[in-house]
Amino acid sequence: MNTIWNVEPKKTGGIMTMIKDRFLSFAMVFGVGFLLLVSLVLDAAVAAAGKFVGDRLPGGEALWQGVQLVVSLAVITLLFALIFRFLPDIHPTWRDVWFGAIYTLFYVKFATHGWQYALLPFHFLMGPIHGAIVNWCGHKYGYRNFDNGDLSRNTLVFDFLTSGELFQNNHHKFGMSPDFAARWFEIDPTWQVMRVLAKAGVIEIATPQRAVYPATVPAAS
Image (cartoon, rainbow, N blue to C red):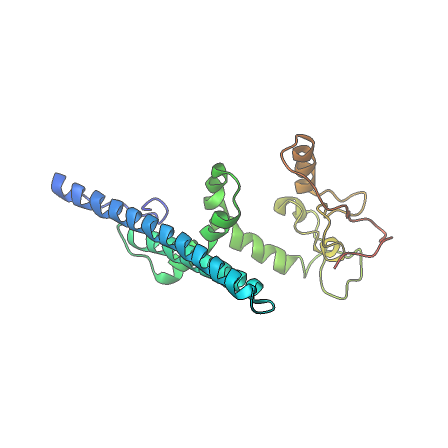
């Protein structure tokens, strides 16, 4: 945690101080683990309640599934916020803590392999920067292949710096296409990587839609 927040560790005053600090850190992690187990029990209880309600009220089970998801996400976010707040040798502001906890939540819910957590530092850094570039430059500068009724644009050559994300005009036209490039001179770097991974059997590309120019088929909504 000290490394994440760029904090110099406290100078220990002796072996007893070190043991105390390590014990408190261990107790915090153990307590978070216990609360996580409690959250699993709550998930099971909410799921059971949803089944009970679903058998008696139309749409009841779907409602409780939504409640279960919200409760699960809230508990996990709270647990990570507590870790980020109290484990470092300083106490960051709650604003920074919630920001980090929500980002981490994405990995907890959607990461399929443990190694993917190594990408978290890059996500923390590049997420806001990348989002600002795409949502500003991609709707202000560049050219348009399609009249989508919005301000989206394609921003070559800077598109290569964002791995294809600045083909926003193409993307808005073909929302389900994994390849954001539509014309012969446009190259989506991420799509090239996806093709290699698909051939290697690492991923499966399920959607059949592809961006084409000129548009000859209706774009998916």
